[in-house]
Image (cartoon, rainbow, N blue to C red; front, side):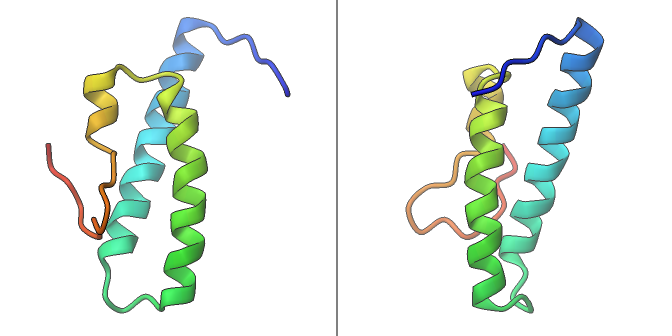
Length: 77
């Protein structure tokens, strides 16, 4: 396990980067042109990035990125 110390500005930047990455992955997951194997890799990476974001975000912010069972779309909450 690694630990990092971030100042407030760095935390905001990390938050922004993680949100944008999650948005991109959600967009890619709804794209019908992407093959199933690629989507599986994206979903695997999504889980890791989501767990990272969960350490920074409030429950309300985090709820925007929760993917439910069978959820293959993009949520606009």
